[in-house]
Structure formats: C-alpha cells, structure tokens
Image 1 (spheres, helix red, strand yellow):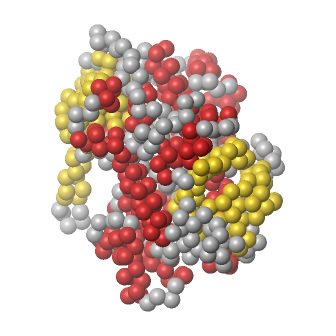
Image 2: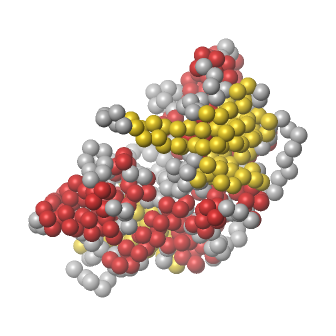
Image 3: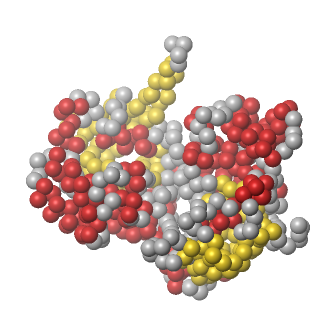
Length: 539
C-alpha cells in the first residue's frame, strides 16, 4: 500500500437510484481526492449525494443503490470490488466513520467502554488488560473527564457532546488512515461544536489521517477545511481550496449556498413598546427529583428564576448550550411539563398551576413547532388529517377546517396536492412547513419554535426563517424562538435571553446583546461560533 499517495481517491463515481426516483443517479461521475493530513469538506443541500458517497466509501450502500461506474480507492485498493469480509477487515482499521447522531450510533444497553472494547476484540489480538489500557488511553485522548467512570457509563448517562466523543474514540482507536465525519456537529450547541471541531483537527493532525467531512454548515467549512467540494443533485459542481471556493465561488449554486449563510448582524427593527403583552413569566422554576432504588434522591434545577416577556408582533430568542434550560422553559410555558414555582401569564391568566382540565380551552392560544418534523407528524396520517385535527377538536366543521388547511398550505408555499400525501413523501424542509401550517391552523397568539431549523440545510433554513418572519409580520404573532445557533437568532429575534445552567444571565434587545455582550458567558458563546469572522464572498 502506498504511504505517499492520497488516502482516498474517488474516480468518476456513479451510484444509481431505484427506478421511479426523481433522477437516475444518486451520484453521477464524481471525482475528488483526500490526502494525508488533509480535511476535505463535502457540502450541498439534502439529497445532493453527500451521505451516499460516504456510505459508498465505507461499503455500506444498500442493494437498491448500486455503484454503476467509477472506482473508490483506499490507499490504492479498489474497495468497490472488495467482498464483505475484506470490507469488514478495513472498517475501523483503515477507515472509520463518525455518524451525525451519537445516540443512535451507540448501543444503549452496552457501556461505552464495552463498545470500544468490541472494536478491539474484533480487530486485534490484545489481551483484556491491554485492551482496558487502550480504552482509557483513547478516552483521555478525546478529552473526556474521569475515563474509568466514562468507560463504565451507558450512553444515556452522558451529554450529547460526551457521546459524540465516545463515537470519535471508537473511530480512532485503531488509528485509521481515513476518517469520515457525517454531520458530526449539527445537533450540538455552539461551544460543544467548537470543542468537537478542535478535537477532530487535533486528532487528525496527530494521527495523520485524511478526513472527509460532510456538512451543510459553512461556518464549519470556513473553520476546518483545506479543500471544499460542492455537490448538487449528485453532481460535483465546484471543487477547490477553501478560500478560493468560499471567497471566489464560480458556480451559481455555490453562490446561492454562501448567500444563504446567516450573519451575526441582527436586523434593526422597531418594536411597538405599547403592544399588548402576550406572554410573561415571573420567577419560573423547574426542579427535577432523581430518585434512586435506595430511597435517596437528587435535585436538578433545570430552570431558576426565569422572568421573560413577549409582546404581540415581537420575537424573543432564547439561546444557550444544551442543558441550559431553554427547552425546559418552553415546555413549562406550553404546560407539557408542570413548573415547580413561579408564574406563566398568558395575557392576564396565570396557567402555571392551572389544573389540566382547565387548560384545554387555552391550548389553541399557544402552539409549538419542534426540532424534528418527522417525529412531530404521525407517519400513518395524511397531511390533511394532521392539519384539520386541531381545529375540528375545537369545534370547527371538517369542511371549514379543510378550507383553512388549503389556505395555510398556500401560505407556507406548498401546493394543495400535499393534503393527500404522507409525511415520508416530503423533504425535511417541506415537513417543517407542514408543522408550521399545523400550528397556525389553531390561530395561536403565541408561536414557540424549539430548534425548528437546526436540522435543516443552509438554503432550506434560510427559506424557513424567511417564512417565520413573514408569519410574524402578517399575523402579528408573538414568537418565542429557541436556538443554539447565534446566526439564526440574529436573523429573527428582536430581543434575546441568554441562558446558562437554568438561569437567564443576559437579557435585552438583540442588537445590544450582539454588539456589546455584557456577560462573560455570552461573550464565550459568540467567540465559539465557527467561521464568525470569516470573509465570505459577498453574493
């Protein structure tokens, strides 16, 4: 095997789609290389073929997606011709993959140490004592605290960032020459994302591996890439050095993607200070009690003394790391969970301690759009059934509810033909539009968006953000926007509340918080944002 040539060569690769798809090929005649010590970022919208290429390299393609042309060379060996046994030998030893969602990549009933040990047992002849030493060594290398405790822990006992470090440890434990990272930081908050990116860079430099990094986040691309390859509908439309592609893009599609990247500059907007207050929380608190089998219990304060106010026509953003209490506050406001103390005033009514049976008439006044639109929709019900369910339950006739559903689909820029289709027949961005339409069907006074665009690629994210802004302006809604992406918050929020460990540490107009953050935690969030100061092309 060559020790001087590229780690990975993808030559004229074509991968077919099943008959009846929207195009003939998932990937069509794509070529690029990944050198030793090089990070190549593969970017493009959902459906562009990024993950299909990664699966092809790892030999994980389903039978419905056969390689119909070209070669994939790993250190000169054509792995498109390798049998299942050879691919099994290559995985983890010569090539490894970090998946997007660590909770689904890890086995929930095995300790983290046992899952790394499984890799070592399969591919090495190390003794149990040597394997244990290597496990603790790699856990230390990925900067996890207290490696013996982490090794004995199950995935659900760790944070999202810690779980992702476990997946990275599994991928690197045998020093592969190629590391594939498929959207490994999309679901992580900004500071954890910065730590993971720095970790991948450091480990890649130390191990000398080539990295194929798949992402739709151009901030991440600006932070780590040496080379950038841009895919559109399975075709490679542009490839080159990072600064060349991001500062002097040649293709219209690349320029469109870069133009969709939100900035950290909040939009100046006049807010009517006399507008009625739709929502106000006063000293809102939520404490969870973790009880053990032995009668002991531990209190976890998820929210402490949270006081917020949202007026009609205003968008209040809540930002902070995972575990800061953002979603807990939202769920207390919607009364999906019961607050421990404090008030939640919806207009003049305090719903914080209101019995559940009295809440039903108020439910339509507050609606929420969740992060994952696929899990938010019943896969067995058509779009029409999803949109009319709420209004019908609150007394609207089916005829009137269907008429409203058609109007709402048009409002969120979808064709009325979508009514008879099922959620799986739509893209992620389309499903999120359906969820927004479903929330608006109840004609709410307050709309809560809980990480509603974090899973969307950059161009679809821009479209949904613009849609939410239009909804706020046309319907004069109050909106509570929860996000860990500061660039997104800058685009849609009038006021900003920064949360850390269950407390609001900074609160004020968005332009003020962004231009002159007063709290050190807020400043740390801004500094951790990937690509914050990168000079993208003006398009």
